[in-house]
Length: 108
Length: 117
Image (cartoon, rainbow over all chains, first blue to last red; front, side, top):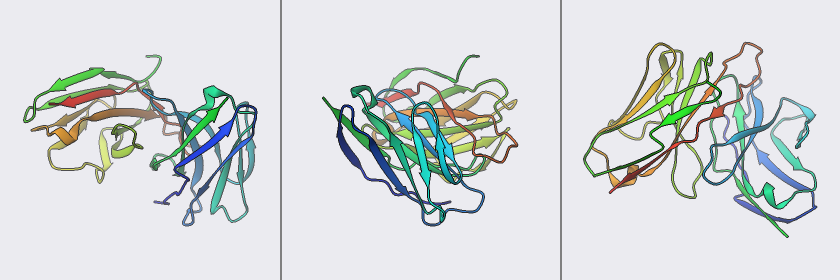
């Protein structure tokens, strides 16, 4: 399994763009990169998934360089409600494991 | 059902007792996962089922932990002779196990908060 490394915590302010980078040096050819968000007292929920280049949806963008050894989750114009833990997962089909995550704190 | 459900939502037990936690996955989801999350910590993978079989049990922390899944649906996680360090939130997730080749989105239940006194 590809191991992931993320910063333990990050701080930001309302209205700023936040970029969280995840390292996954031994990602396999079939592995996808998925990000989840977890609020206190809730289970994680899916944010975005990608394989290569850039993926964008209504809440985030995911940037994946050509070597796929890292990925960056980009949250545009964060608000206080984006304060949560963000997990990067690497794997394929049903073989994904959660790392420790990045605790994002958005300040007013 | 509309989502993954887990029961009980809260369980308080005494050290040494056995507990059984239940997970009802989303109908049609063939993959089911159990995780454990201690206060303020990340998710710790315990076990995953593909149908009724568990190809990966490597995350179970000790032989006091066991899990089964019958009928490709409901799963139970059993902890025997509970210890205080077993106190945590136990989360269950299910996924479709699609054939598109992409990673499956996991849908999580609300969790069971286990407290061992």
